Image (tube, rainbow, N blue to C red; front, side, top):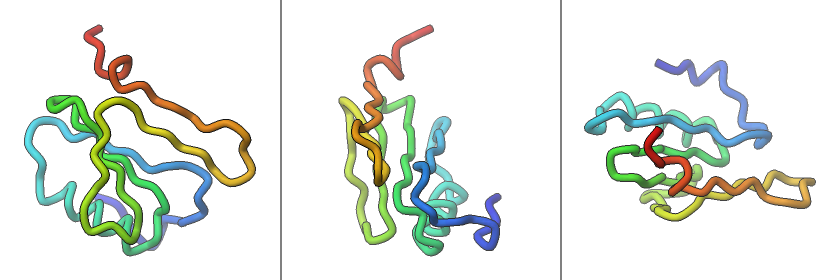
Length: 91
């Protein structure tokens, strides 16, 4: 469980979590908490569905990505790009 009082919304890094199996009330609670404290970018990684939900504080619904996710913090020239085929490739 996360403590919202300890979180900083500085925008330096995205917050990501992996959802094993079915989504739980705890994962929905964490997402709402991250939105409330202003975490600027939150990824929910679903390895079963091979997708990533991208959330921001303003979102009521996620942007669902199946090919790649990108993150480009302020002051950086090139975005970090995570290829989801590569991420979900069997080991």
